[in-house]
Amino acid sequence: MDSHPLLKTLGIDNLHHGACTGEWIETTGEPITSLNPSTGEPLGTVTGARRPECQLVLARALERFDSWRMVPAPARGEVIRQLGNKLREHKEPLGELIALEMGKIRSEGLGEVQEMIDICDFAVGLSRQLYGLTMHSERNRHRMYEQWHPMGAVGIISAFNFPMAVWAWNAAIAAICGDVSLWKPSPATPLCALAVQKICNEVMAENDCQGLFNLIVGGADEGRWMADEGRIPIVSFTGSIPVGRKVAAQVAGRLGRSILELGGNNAIIVMDDADLDLTTRAITFGAVGTAGQRCTTTRRVFAQKGIHGKLSQTLCKAYSTIKSGDPLDESTLLGPLATARAVADFKAAIELAQQQGGEVLCGGNAVEGPGFFVEPTVIKAPPQQGFPIAWEETFAPIVYLFEVDDLNQAIIDQNAVTQGLSSAVFTDSLSTAERFLSPAGSDCGIANVNIGTSGAEIGGAFGGEKDTGGGREAGSDAWKAYMRRQTCTINWGGELPLAQGVTFDVG
Ligand code: UN1
Image 1: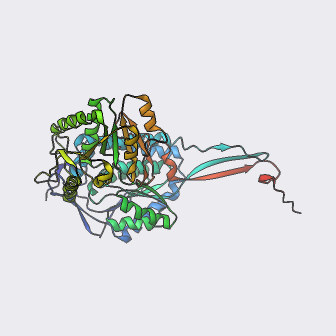
Image 2: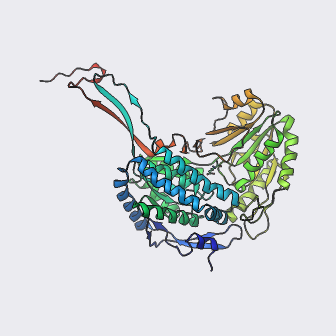
Image 3: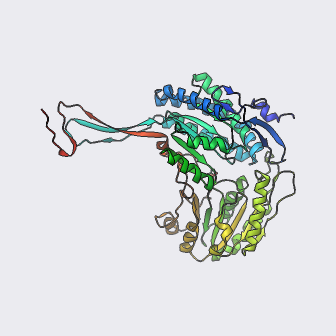
């Protein structure tokens, strides 16, 4: 089989080893074949890592940690600055590789690479801002402060839908924090991981810091190994709620730290006073972008009575213009789903929705192969309590459109599901917006006004509550999850006063 030209451009056409620490390690595990979701054809095969190979990667990573933790944080930032620059240089082919292997459209693939570049820039600045607080000691001639130290190895288990960016959120921040990382990408997108690792290898070689960014290609078994491995103090997992529960329990069982980004079931509330055109565009991007396979995808819309009818029309009109097909074609807005299984899940969800009283307003069908294509679908739904399919996250471009009386009901329905990632309200009313953002409003980690549920910027902390797992990644102070806090008290006087006025006179 001839490799795809993109693999040649990125220099990964003859890479088959599934482990790397800066140098590729010969692996002997199961072959993992990457399929092009647009055609169902294989793109390449990578040999997975077996346990001894995983152990070797970890040993080299820990060896690097010994010295990396002593590199001043701004000097660590310099390495990430170089990484960001190399990602800039390779933005186009990397973005196109995402489109090829994962199936999101080219513009979103480039956007994902931009997310990596942005987080590198953010991490560079952050490398001079790992601030700790200074406290006033209650004792004479004492100083008290806290400082942040690296933790060690960070395991990153990422999902197919963001095959590069979610790694970068974790790895770039971990690196400036003084940690090393071990990446286990989704077995559906190993080529994206090889391409990124190859760029990391160049940066590590130029800075003599091999072992800083490490790769392990494997399946569920390698993920379990990471979750169980006591020498990996932090495990960042992105994926399904059932698997996330297992990872959380395993990591907690050894008193490790997990950072979880699990499912979302994100809603947009549309009030009668919303701008219809803005709302329609936001819902369309939120529900159809990345073929409905973002954890931030808009899955439910709660429209107030007065706008519900108009919105169903404008949505179906917008949907009728969406061109699906080759994600690398500039005019395509909807690429394929990731797998044949995802198409089966789409069909099952449509069938259940209809059985439960939903009415397909537009779309509703899978498209004949080749490739895993489906139609973008709007379903008019009965009240949510009697519509159990809407409580589940189906990774497909299906949006359920509900009618609600008022904001109170919309907020209750929005918050009723077990997931708590992203949410939005469309309104022109300040008080409606503020009620939505108040403690009695949205219960999600992300709450937007007149912006859809997906497409968050890296500067904010990303993550959600309840079954979404509670983790926070990327911007704001999410870095604190990758470090340990140390409280230090220094006595610079000649006496030894005890705290709380305790006396303990000896001799
Ligand atoms: C994900 O779907 O796992 O907010 C991450 C967004 C993207 C990240 C999504 N920046 O939609």
